[in-house]
Length: 323
Image (cartoon, rainbow, N blue to C red; front, side):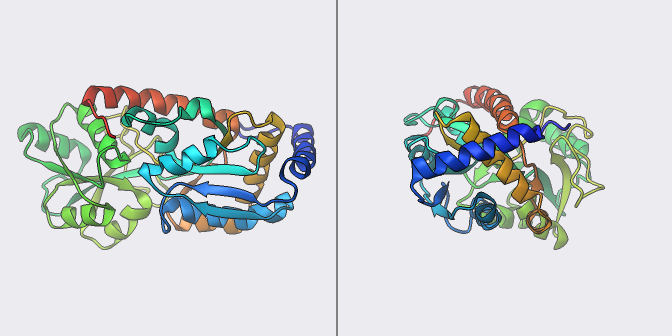
């Protein structure tokens, strides 16, 4: 049995309990999947693909509710405050579960206490990119260049506290180098800056990196993940490049309000994995640059703890505080 599998008896019991609880707690209301980011975000893409397959499996209408604002805190807080009856779920990113509570001075809730993990749906490993003008064909060569020119090389991010920002600072710490951070208003501006050599490094999710690599203007130095990307088989992981401590991915996970019945969480998790196991959804996610995970509540909880420990320490070291 894999780490994500559950005994058939538990699955059937969970589904039965969920069906009964759904009628009593929700009175036929649709399941609402909150995405705490703007329309067009990766989260919306995952959510709409997921609910299309999930609705017939649950025998219940499922809708996507876009609740952007405050780096995802507004939508996540709405789910944390919702009744724990399984009617309202959060499809959030790593930041919502393991980063924002350490960044923001006035966080209204603690994700580890206020949200109940259901399972990680998909992962977006980060690719470390440089441009053609930078004389470094490998990550080791870039590190050597940065050591020879401390503080001279720049790196881009779409803002303070984002995965590209924190991931590159993690890289700099582990490699013992000093880079200058240049935040932009979004990923598009950051990519353009790299192409124009305003910056020499950009750590970004593969879905964004793919067209940049295929266009020939940028080259990948490493994948900041524990495994190589099938789409980039010749690009080493950061561990293979000599920096095993540099893991910076942005996964998307499903959770409900704390206090959800274990049977409900189990049943929804099983249904989600069933939906993801269908070829149409899995292949579409892969095409868009996601790595399909389909994890259990327990596996997600463990990942949240691990990521929270990693990012909280780095944020304290950097002294970052946001309002």
